[in-house]
Image 1: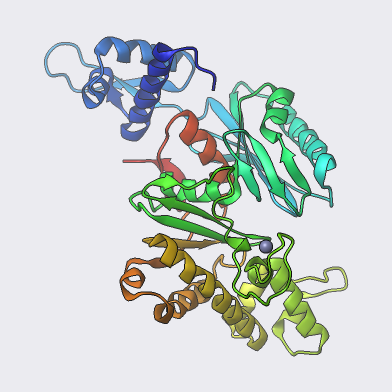
Image 2: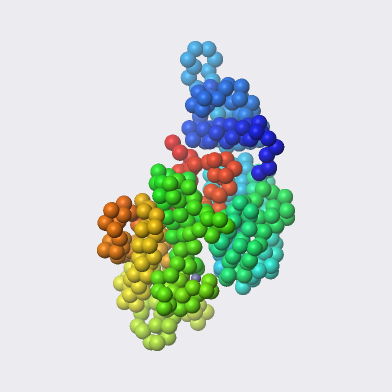
Amino acid sequence: MKRTGDLKLIQELNRSIILETIRKYGSISRSEIAKKNELSPTTVTSAVAELINEGYVVEGGTGTSSGGRKPILLNFSPDNHYLIGVSISYSKITIADMNLEAKINMKKVYPTNGYTGAALINYLLQLLEDFYAAQQDDRQCIGISLIIQGIVDSKKGVVHYNPVLLLEDVYLRDSVEAHFNLPTWLDNDTNAYVLAEKNFGHFQEVENLIYITIGEGVGSGVIVNNMLSRGESGGAGEFGHTSIDYHGELCSCGNKGCIENYISWPATSKKIMKEIEAGKETILTTYLTSDKLFITPSEFVEAVHTGDGLAVAINDEIAEYLSAGVVNLVHLFNPEVIILGGDVTNQNQILIDAVQQKIKDKTLKTLYQDVDITTSSLGKEFEMVGAASVLLQDKFQFKLTHDNRGLKTNL
Ligand SMILES: [Zn+2]
């Protein structure tokens, strides 16, 4: 966001604080807002007039009076505006229209169709154009928020490195912003998830928090002392490229034995198919048909729960490799919570328990006592909640609380 001077900056900050107060408390009067934030009544009155005019706030009902006229109460209005969240993974592009509480109004999932590099970006712009054109109503779009795997510099809006989608130093944010003339945000996917857990999820009080994604790739987002660690160019948290075997197989990054090559879903899926082809008896073969020659992560997790020998053995192998990496993270960062997210860990409590158990004997006792290994609190729409959180917390300093029905304001 461009700012022309200190006064404008202060006005914007005050507006954010006032809007956040209305969202957080609901049904609140102007004088209460002024008192809570130690702002002058004039500042609150003029900011509220703007917020009402722009449709972020509505007047409704009256409060109790301490003498004199009853005050008019203000409420947050999340549905007059929307944002577009976009998640770009190796196999699919997900686009959703969400309100200002990250509630999905419409979501579409498109396969990447093998597109990479410039062709992928053109395909993305086309999909976004069609999606945006379909939102024909009175609501105003406040911006687009994109999340993607790889090394992403969120300040510059650049995807520095994504070897699978063949993106190198792509100024994706500027391209999208120029194309749609809408403010645009860009961040790494796992950074978005850990920010969402911290600002929107169940871990708002946790100061040292790590989120590990195990899906198409393996990555992490690391919050140290309440701050997201981004590194010099956005590359901090490349957990997938930390080595757990110096003699292991060569990785695309140049290193040997990178953890991603042992526990990502493509690596696991390859292992399963190899065992099936070798004639191993497993319930997993029932998921294969002549039209579907692959197993999905959720089918794998289902098989683990039925006690299928192959699935259980592979799940335990993932836990073994993963715990080797997690032990390193615990010793480096002394976190309070490590969240295991992504397709492979989704509904896979057996894996999470196994990791918690396996790191016990390999971690310094004091550090082990501090750390809790757990699942994501963002629900099945974690990708879209992550995308929305990047925009909402930057633009409005929103802090939401998550429950099973979706996101709601803090009480
Ligand atoms: Zn690597």
